[in-house]
Image (tube, rainbow, N blue to C red; front, side):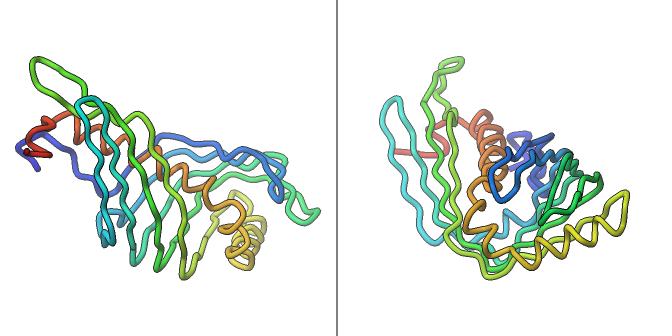
Length: 193
């Protein structure tokens, strides 16, 4: 919608994120220069909107054929199976046949006589994932290869146990993109009565 001055949403970008330590990963995972690809190639399976004069909730159940996460990473004191994998570099993760549910909660606020939606909280949950493949390029290629192998061999357990923690990066990025759109387009244009 260029008439509203919206920037392209491919890729979605987020400056930095920390995935806090929790077993099986007993170290904080630092990511920066995050880019999320293919999130606009979504099939919306179900949508639910709840509106009032002051509150807004949008729930999307979605299917993505393929989404890609890329970032610079920094793992400090990173012990995998008793081996120190501390390193920095670039990582990519590709999820295929990925289903999720995302809830946007917000408020209706007035600005210059017009009402706009402001998203105040966004939550995304993994419903299912057909496959996940990762690639780490490290300052130490042996460590990068070992981290890649570890994630690729254990992706199902990681998604099951830690998936929602990683998906919080998506939630935060979706919230920024949604607020960029909602701040430019009045509520009554998006949701005419």
